[in-house]
Structures are given as structure tokens and as C-alpha cells.
Length: 118
Length: 392
Image 1 (cartoon, rainbow over the protein chains, first blue to last red):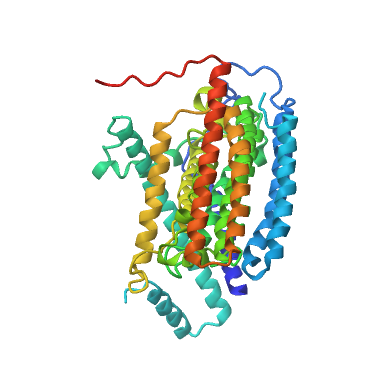
Image 2: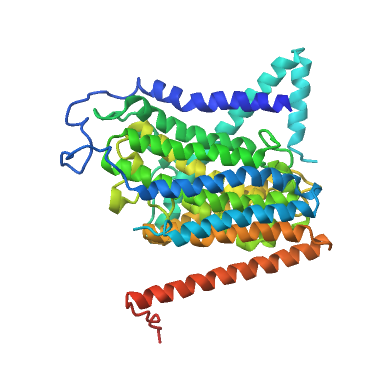
């Protein structure tokens, strides 16, 4: 088991290094002639007005919150799914209650209008 | 006979014959596995880019690349060489470190997934016992890379693209993960090879649970930023999305990540729902395993490309509503249904039939609900739904 994680470790290091090493090697092949116009922010020829990092819509934040609820559910769902064949009927009832509670959260968010994109 | 694993046995005995210690053997094996997988991933991307351009061209009644090499096969190599020699621009206002990290991370995230894809019986980088969870975890690094790229570019289009990336990729992650949980329940393991083994004898989970398979395919389309879910790079709205400021090889890295992601999402669909390398005579002739795997994966990839060339984009509110109001409830119901049916005291064949019926019923109910909603919308906006004029 540990041997297979050695492969994962080596693979992780090489896969992480690969794009950056290639970028470094290629930096000897390409020209580098920066000028202020070229380095300005792209906006179809116009100069940008105002700051980019402005307040963004709370809508995105709300979706992220709902996502967290279900993502945590997944953490519990997968171990349960693996061991499911060895567990009794109790496991089914337990997960039904758990998913039911989460479905209730989804219904609440739905009724509250969080899922409507304005 | 004709077992690709024989090569592995030969390689192992060759290494042991050199008299190396076991630590070195593990290290050399790890490097060999890495080089093979990376080589496979990169060459298949070269081919996939050509295939996408050729298929899209055929759908749109064009010829596509046809100058370099037979059927234009070398076009992608030429494009890659061109991108390598292009100047790499970092805008003055960008966050330099995050800006330069993002393209590499987006490649890294998808390269990691290659490690757990079973190409044939036993032909797998590492058969991790947490395979499916590994895929979910590594897949979400890609979302982070998109957000990093969009935020650090200091460009309004890029930032909008990044916000959309978070909204869309996060929303479709949930139905996707739910769809991937159902095969795990039926197989009782998260090992990718174990999941393929569990689908022997034609009991493909995609046939047993057609609705789950459809949920996975739709979520995969959204995760891969393909139409009708290509909001992240919607050309007509936000120009190119989060990678608008990138040029040269960094731009190429985003495209490499995109096409690797297509390959991997199709591979995961093959392994979880279409039986992976399973097929007739695979027990007697193991070399057939990789062939079945490649045929199935290519069919799914071709479907993705066909679909991208055909459909227009949805509206963003429709896209979000579809994920949260249709796919997530469907996924929750079907996961529970799969669990409940697996506990029924009847044979496996009968269980499969019952699960199939439940899936079809859920699919029909969902389609009915969507249809009713669309009719209500049409009434609200007083849009007349006229039947298509028939040719006579």
C-alpha cells in the first residue's frame, strides 16, 4: 500500500514541475519586448475605467454556501457507500434521514429564493 | 496470451536481475509510470485537438485543418510550436505570482487524474483504494486555478469569467459527485479497477442506472465548459473569460488542461458507467481490454465534441436553476434509490431490473416537471410555441 503512494508522490512532483519547467525552457525561445501599451489591461482598445476588484454580487457567495453544505455531505456519503454492503438495514435508514435533512435545507434555500438568479 | 501485464512481469524481473535494492526499484517504477502516463496524456491531447477541429468543421460543413500532413494531422504540432515562440505578456496591473502559477496548476490538476484511470485489466497507474475520492479532490484544484487566473489578471472580463467559473463549476460538482457515488454503492469499492471489475457480464452501471449516467454526462459537459454550459468563456459576453490576458505557452496550458479534462471526464464515465475495459472475451485475451476502453472513451469524447458544435448557449439563470432544481434533487433521490434497491432480498439480476425501472421513472418525472415549467414560462412571456413547419 505504501509503495503505491510512493508512485503517487513521484507522479505528483513530476506533474507539478512539468508545466513550470517547460515554461522556463521555452522562455529562452521567445522574444521579450514589453512596452506600456502592450502591458496594459486588455479591454477591446479602450482604457479601463475604475478599479477591477469591486464589490461583487452576493449571489455568487450564496451559491458557494449552498455548495459547502452538499460538499460536506459527500465527505460522509463516500465512506458510507464503500462500507454499505457490509452494513445492515440501519445504514440505509440513517443515510435516508441524513439526506432528508439536507434535502430540507435545499427546499429551504429554494423557498427563500436563493436559487433564483436575479 | 497477449497480456500486456507480461511486459510488467518482464520489467520487474529485469530490475531485480540488476541487483538493485527494493527502494530503488520502487523509485524507478514510479518514474517509468509517470513518464508513460504523461506521454500518453500529452500525445492524446495533440490528437484530440485535431479531432475537435475536424469534427466541428464537418458539423459546420467546412473542411477543417487539411494542409499539414495527411488529413492535417500535424496541424496541432505546428500550433504548439508557434505558441512556444510567442511572447509571454504579463500585464502591469496583474498579481505576478498568482498570475504565473494559475496555468501550471490547471495542467497539474488534470494530470493527477490520469494516475487512477484503468486502461485495461490491471493496467492502471496506481490502483488507489480511494480512487473516486481522489478524482473528486484533484478535480477541484482546477476550479481554484480558474479563480486564481481570473482574479490575478486584474481585468474585468477575466474577473467575471472567474466568478462564473466558481458559480458553474461548484454547482455542477454536486450532481456529478452524487452520480459518481451510485456506482460506488453498487460495487462496494472506490478503487477504479474494482469498479470496472464489478461491471463484468454486461452489468454496466450506465445501463442499470440510465438516469444517473445522464446526470453524470450533463455535469461533465458543464465541468468541461462545453456548450450549452460555456459561460466561463462565453465569447460574445466576456470575450474569453478567465484566460483573456494570457498569451504564448501559458495560454496553451489552459487549452492543454481543457482537452485533458475532456479525455479524463470521458475516461471516468467509461470506467464508472460503461464497464471500463469490460467486454466480450476480455478474460481470454486481456489485450482486448485497452481496445474496449479506447473505443468507449472515444465514443463519449466524440459525443462531447458533436454536442459542442451543435448547441447554442443557455442563459446563466437557466444554467444555475438546472443544476440546483433538477439535477441535485434527481441525484439525491437516485442515490437513495440505489442504496434501497441494493438491500432488497432478491437476486442481483432482479435488483438491476428494479433499479432500471426506478431510474426511468425518475427521469420521466423530471422531464415532465421541466416541460411543465417551460410551458408556464412560455405563457408568462406570451411566447407562442409554434410547431416546426413540415416539409411537404
